[in-house]
Image 1 (cartoon, one colour):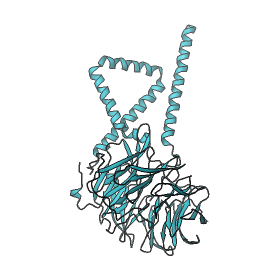
Image 2 (image 1 turned 180 degrees about the vertical axis):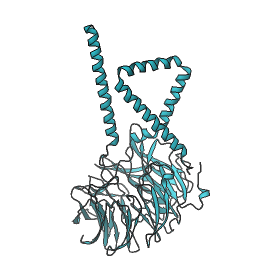
Image 3 (image 1 turned 60 degrees about the vertical axis):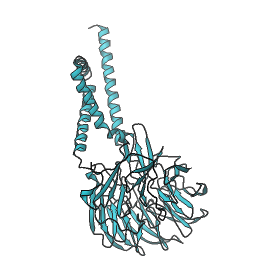
Image 4 (image 1 turned 45 degrees about the horizontal axis):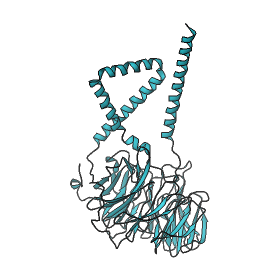
Length: 527
């Protein structure tokens, strides 16, 4: 054999090995990128470009299939030429061709499975979701949703109507115009208006939006877009909507003030970090945490800074009570802090054994906090959690109750009891005065969304997609609803709101649910 031919064959072998290594390296990097779960503080980034891509893979594969069939029918010579070229390529590059074939077959199989699953989904009640800008309907002026869960008791229930007595699905909302949407923000309901934040994924970016939805006509009244994804639940007061933006990895995020009727931006306040939490509105001031940028007090009317408490990382909704603001730190030096509401001057601090994540509530002379290791997505390597009750004036611990895993939820206070969920799967009811256990009920999955509490019923959501109604007196289960009858991919990080006799909750996969309909046969918007 000639030297030139040997060199050519040697060069082709080297090239084949390089191509094979390159493909293997790229495949490994892709698998690593998909499977990696970077820490995003207590709040996970729930939506990204990959999610958007995966959501349209069935359509992409269907298009490829149609294109191939068209080629076979109308361009047989070209198809034969491509087949022979691929056969020659496979003979020369067996490993590379095998990997490509495997990837294509797995992709086609997965896409076909997705198409079959989607076609087998049960009839889903949906809504008219044409995005429009209208001022029809009225925003109730005598009710507000002044902070996370509605008020300093964190009950998620601000009107006098009881909650739903059964778990019938009234309607489901889905934004048909967006490629991939995450509604893990928690809704705020004022009158017949539902306000909620969201994350929107496309192939090349992740953005956010705030929605205003009419709960009666089921129309989108307005949608305000943000360049940054939104997890922050909104606060609504004085005809305005206040909402933060960003996840843990985001910086230079804003707290935005929007007109409640039109969605138009009134002002925005820039921070050096992110605003995952809900501001607390009190006496014309907004108190909110901004991640690594500490805690701010700003004027609610103009958005001007009044004071700034620096040097901590906080991602909860603070609470203001009798001239004092209370919040906690989830990074570095775990502590609970009380500052003067007017000046931000530190009054007392108390060291804690675990990160302080749960949004505090206040009842008389006690302030309640949830603590724990881990995040919304995962438990810590050594799970642990607790609820602590501190004296509002001194910061002394009055009582504490241990849980098996982190307490990331707000602590709801109602009729002398506190209610909360834990990653250990339980919803707890304790006596507010001394922390004695009244009852605990297992929901069968981590509870990372805050319960909604009425005088008669506690409404809890498990991360695995189930919503439950429990007796407030005994914890006995009254009904349950499985959101995965709509889609199998739902996880519940959103906290339910009870208003107008109904329950509203967002989800991780495009849907907002409304429960408590009168009659299953009259579900709104059957398709």
